[in-house]
Image (cartoon, rainbow, N blue to C red):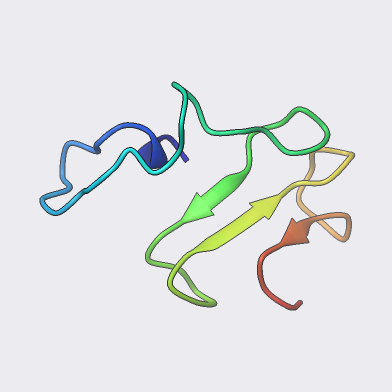
Length: 65
């Protein structure tokens, strides 16, 4: 999610920063969110690995599973 606060080297049309501060916010459990763009489910995907910080059923996503 660093692309929301710092321009990626390969981004030609970046108009950020899109978030205030020097870092993207963390999920409610203190872990970084996972951001994908382009994505599989929409223009972008945001997810959290959940309270156990592992891939699986406890994940919280921006899309319906």
